Length: 166
Image 1 (tube, one colour):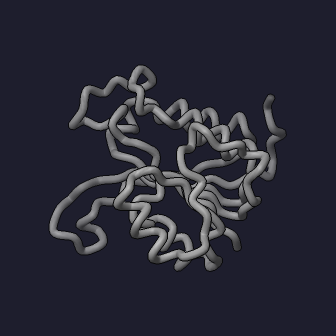
Image 2 (cartoon, rainbow, N blue to C red):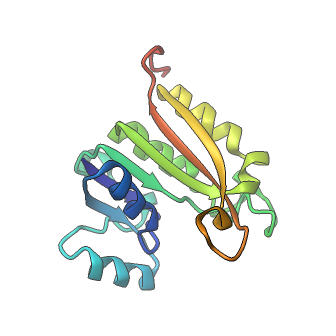
Protein backbone atom coordinates (compact mmCIF):
# COMPACT_ATOMS: atom_id res chain seq x y z
CA UNK A 1 0.00 0.00 0.00
CA UNK A 2 1.29 3.44 -0.95
CA UNK A 3 0.41 6.29 1.41
CA UNK A 4 0.19 9.97 0.53
CA UNK A 5 0.03 12.53 3.33
CA UNK A 6 -1.41 16.05 3.36
CA UNK A 7 -0.68 18.53 6.17
CA UNK A 8 1.65 15.89 7.53
CA UNK A 9 2.91 17.65 10.66
CA UNK A 10 5.24 15.26 12.45
CA UNK A 11 3.67 12.30 10.60
CA UNK A 12 1.43 10.83 13.29
CA UNK A 13 -1.55 10.12 11.05
CA UNK A 14 0.77 8.54 8.49
CA UNK A 15 2.35 6.31 11.14
CA UNK A 16 -1.11 5.21 12.27
CA UNK A 17 -2.07 4.38 8.66
CA UNK A 18 1.16 2.41 8.22
CA UNK A 19 0.54 0.48 11.44
CA UNK A 20 -3.12 -0.25 10.68
CA UNK A 21 -3.08 -0.82 6.92
CA UNK A 22 0.59 -1.52 6.23
CA UNK A 23 2.46 0.11 3.40
CA UNK A 24 4.94 2.91 3.00
CA UNK A 25 4.91 6.66 2.65
CA UNK A 26 5.13 7.59 -1.06
CA UNK A 27 5.05 11.37 -0.58
CA UNK A 28 3.91 14.06 1.80
CA UNK A 29 2.80 17.68 1.61
CA UNK A 30 4.02 19.94 4.39
CA UNK A 31 5.16 23.59 4.55
CA UNK A 32 6.04 24.17 8.23
CA UNK A 33 9.87 24.22 8.48
CA UNK A 34 10.19 22.25 11.75
CA UNK A 35 7.80 19.54 10.56
CA UNK A 36 9.62 19.37 7.20
CA UNK A 37 12.91 18.81 9.03
CA UNK A 38 11.43 15.97 11.10
CA UNK A 39 9.77 14.33 8.08
CA UNK A 40 12.94 14.56 5.97
CA UNK A 41 14.93 12.91 8.78
CA UNK A 42 12.38 10.13 9.27
CA UNK A 43 11.69 9.59 5.55
CA UNK A 44 14.86 10.33 3.58
CA UNK A 45 14.25 10.27 -0.14
CA UNK A 46 10.47 10.64 0.19
CA UNK A 47 9.38 13.74 -1.74
CA UNK A 48 7.69 16.68 -0.08
CA UNK A 49 5.12 18.14 -2.48
CA UNK A 50 5.06 21.37 -0.47
CA UNK A 51 2.11 23.75 -0.59
CA UNK A 52 -1.10 21.81 -1.31
CA UNK A 53 -2.57 24.85 -3.06
CA UNK A 54 0.13 24.65 -5.75
CA UNK A 55 0.27 20.90 -6.46
CA UNK A 56 -0.59 19.58 -9.93
CA UNK A 57 -2.25 16.31 -8.88
CA UNK A 58 -1.97 14.90 -12.41
CA UNK A 59 1.80 14.81 -11.84
CA UNK A 60 1.65 13.08 -8.44
CA UNK A 61 2.39 9.40 -7.90
CA UNK A 62 -0.84 7.43 -7.34
CA UNK A 63 -1.46 6.15 -3.83
CA UNK A 64 -3.77 3.68 -2.12
CA UNK A 65 -4.28 5.64 1.09
CA UNK A 66 -4.52 9.40 1.57
CA UNK A 67 -4.18 10.89 5.04
CA UNK A 68 -4.73 14.48 6.05
CA UNK A 69 -5.27 16.60 9.12
CA UNK A 70 -6.34 19.75 7.28
CA UNK A 71 -6.20 23.07 9.16
CA UNK A 72 -8.62 23.26 12.07
CA UNK A 73 -8.62 27.02 12.68
CA UNK A 74 -11.70 27.68 10.51
CA UNK A 75 -13.77 25.29 12.66
CA UNK A 76 -12.20 25.35 16.13
CA UNK A 77 -14.15 26.50 19.18
CA UNK A 78 -10.91 28.20 20.26
CA UNK A 79 -10.89 30.42 17.17
CA UNK A 80 -13.19 32.81 15.36
CA UNK A 81 -15.03 29.98 13.53
CA UNK A 82 -15.05 31.73 10.17
CA UNK A 83 -15.49 28.45 8.29
CA UNK A 84 -15.29 28.99 4.53
CA UNK A 85 -14.47 32.66 5.08
CA UNK A 86 -11.20 31.80 6.83
CA UNK A 87 -8.10 32.05 4.62
CA UNK A 88 -6.91 28.81 6.22
CA UNK A 89 -9.97 26.92 4.95
CA UNK A 90 -8.10 24.37 2.82
CA UNK A 91 -10.67 21.57 2.62
CA UNK A 92 -11.43 22.46 -1.05
CA UNK A 93 -7.79 21.67 -1.93
CA UNK A 94 -8.04 18.33 -0.10
CA UNK A 95 -11.17 17.53 -2.11
CA UNK A 96 -9.33 18.30 -5.37
CA UNK A 97 -6.53 15.92 -4.32
CA UNK A 98 -8.97 13.14 -3.43
CA UNK A 99 -10.88 13.57 -6.67
CA UNK A 100 -7.72 13.49 -8.78
CA UNK A 101 -5.95 10.64 -6.96
CA UNK A 102 -8.99 8.42 -6.22
CA UNK A 103 -7.36 6.57 -3.28
CA UNK A 104 -8.91 3.36 -1.94
CA UNK A 105 -8.90 4.76 1.60
CA UNK A 106 -9.05 8.35 2.84
CA UNK A 107 -8.27 9.09 6.50
CA UNK A 108 -8.96 12.65 7.69
CA UNK A 109 -8.67 14.33 11.07
CA UNK A 110 -9.88 17.62 12.51
CA UNK A 111 -11.24 19.29 15.65
CA UNK A 112 -14.55 18.35 17.24
CA UNK A 113 -15.90 21.83 16.42
CA UNK A 114 -15.88 20.81 12.77
CA UNK A 115 -19.02 18.78 13.45
CA UNK A 116 -21.01 22.00 13.85
CA UNK A 117 -19.26 24.02 11.14
CA UNK A 118 -18.32 22.74 7.70
CA UNK A 119 -18.53 19.02 8.41
CA UNK A 120 -21.68 18.54 6.32
CA UNK A 121 -19.88 20.12 3.37
CA UNK A 122 -17.01 17.64 3.71
CA UNK A 123 -19.32 14.62 3.88
CA UNK A 124 -21.41 15.93 0.94
CA UNK A 125 -18.29 16.48 -1.16
CA UNK A 126 -16.97 13.00 -0.38
CA UNK A 127 -20.36 11.58 -1.39
CA UNK A 128 -20.39 13.62 -4.60
CA UNK A 129 -17.01 12.08 -5.45
CA UNK A 130 -18.42 8.59 -4.88
CA UNK A 131 -17.08 7.93 -1.37
CA UNK A 132 -18.87 6.54 1.66
CA UNK A 133 -17.62 7.94 4.98
CA UNK A 134 -17.70 6.87 8.60
CA UNK A 135 -16.59 9.12 11.40
CA UNK A 136 -16.18 9.26 15.13
CA UNK A 137 -14.81 11.36 17.95
CA UNK A 138 -11.70 10.18 19.77
CA UNK A 139 -10.33 11.97 22.83
CA UNK A 140 -6.61 12.01 23.54
CA UNK A 141 -7.42 10.49 26.94
CA UNK A 142 -8.90 7.48 25.10
CA UNK A 143 -5.34 6.71 24.05
CA UNK A 144 -3.88 7.32 27.51
CA UNK A 145 -2.94 11.01 27.24
CA UNK A 146 -3.47 13.14 30.36
CA UNK A 147 -5.96 15.45 28.62
CA UNK A 148 -9.27 15.10 26.79
CA UNK A 149 -8.54 16.91 23.51
CA UNK A 150 -11.27 15.58 21.20
CA UNK A 151 -10.69 15.06 17.49
CA UNK A 152 -12.94 13.86 14.70
CA UNK A 153 -11.63 11.10 12.46
CA UNK A 154 -13.20 10.38 9.08
CA UNK A 155 -12.51 7.23 7.06
CA UNK A 156 -13.86 7.21 3.51
CA UNK A 157 -13.80 4.49 0.87
CA UNK A 158 -15.23 4.34 -2.65
CA UNK A 159 -18.93 3.54 -2.55
CA UNK A 160 -19.93 0.14 -3.90
CA UNK A 161 -23.46 1.26 -4.71
CA UNK A 162 -23.31 4.78 -6.02
CA UNK A 163 -22.13 6.29 -9.22
CA UNK A 164 -19.94 9.33 -9.05
CA UNK A 165 -21.83 12.60 -9.36
CA UNK A 166 -20.13 15.22 -11.54
